[in-house]
Amino acid sequence: MTFGAAGLHLVPLTVASVTRDDPKTAPPGAAAWKDVGMRQATRTLRKIGASALTVVLGSLASTIACAQSQTEATPGPWKYSGTLYLYLPSLGGNSTAPADTGGTPINVTAKEIIDSLKFTVMGSFDAHNGRWGVFTDLIYIDLGADKQRSEAFTIGNIGLPVGATADLGLDLKGLVWTAAGQYRFINEPAFTLDGLAGARWLDLRTTLRWNIYGNIGPINPAGRSGVHESKVSVVDAIVGARGRVALDSERRWFVPFYADIGTGQSDMTWQAAAGIGYAFKWGEISGLWRYLGYDFKPGESLVKVNFSGPMVGATFRW
Image (cartoon, rainbow, N blue to C red):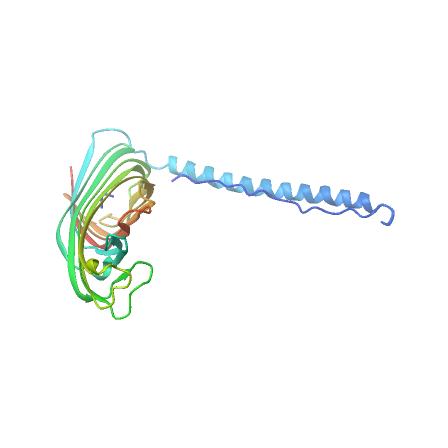
């Protein structure tokens, strides 16, 4: 598979206000005793806060020291790896399109329609020199299917009209390209951990076809059938982590993992993958489950989309 700084948040401690007794009615010395109690409570809370802060800072320092004490990844010749993989995702999400000149939308649930992978090309490339490195990952995918007499749609804000069904077709062609720089925080023989920062570009073209039977609600009769084509192209900044954990002393069996999250022209994008692999002298083979999701900003024809499914790949190193 080609695919961490701790944040410290200090929570202010607040001492509830204390109402003083009326000096005319309070017993002698009561006010003085209350002042002493307030000072003691304040000192106690300060000690607790200082102790908590010391523990947090100590833990953070220990983590950083531990990471720095790992086996050094000294600069030297560049090391490269390339991966070709087969990804068989299912598609989830929602698409919307104006069904008539008045703008009444027809909303389609993609996962209820698309169940056919037409074509895909996928691969990744990684380069490392010491602790620093770069990687890129590319997915081109073509999905599409048609459903007859489907109820996987709604009209406007009224939901699915009683007795309405439709012949629906949805095609989606997409390119997902991720590129990032990476830094190796932990470089142990049995465990590696890289932090990464970069960008991801998503370019999707969708074609929605419909022919509605029965009650069409507020749609103009001319909108009973139609075709709508749309495009979504967004670039987002991402941060994340990737690495692998060896499962045996010879480090042949291992668990690869990857996770990132980002935002920018989309509301949010996130990705995660994990699985198991086996190393050979020439490289390795691995099988993972991969998830990639997007939430788009208002106004896009795609409200959200996600890809989820198994992935099998072969990695070559040189």
